[in-house]
Image (cartoon, rainbow, N blue to C red; front, side, top):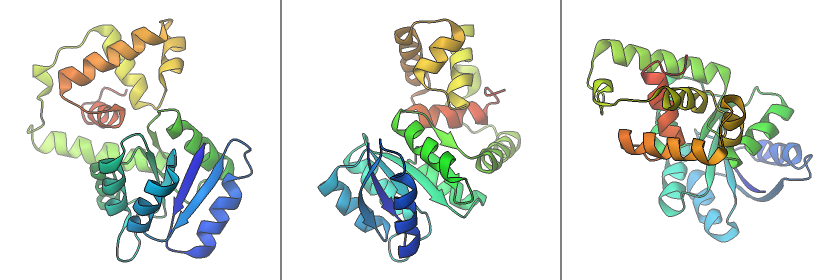
Length: 216
């Protein structure tokens, strides 16, 4: 798989490149120092995954994520940053990030996260997941202005089981194995749930599941 790294600190860009290329399946095709440069280089190098820092001068990670996703939804964007505050996490998710992990993560887990995002999973580090869940639980408690309202959506038991596993980061093949289903059945159920909720992708579905307590 082809990976692009965006970070404003040169030594970190180079260090991440060395870490990722320990894996023979990963090729780092380009480095960028901000969100705009990442977007421009995506058009040239067509990476499969972008590893994106959030806070960079001039054009931050949110700018880069929006620009990349607006041009090519196929490209997965995994945020790798030192910041786990609610504002930064929410900004990344609202921009369309496919995952969010922290730089304190071990090298092997960074590599595994890149591979998982490439495979279609939504990846959130433990600390990020807790912040995201707490934030959404507070929002649900304080107001019921969520769209669509949970009462407007009716799920089968199978759909609920699948949504729970999507929120926990499993891909279609893993869900199929856990629930003893065909992979096509899992894919069809996810498509049906996305249609019911008027959601765009698995990341939005995972966020919805956390918000409504369907990930337990």
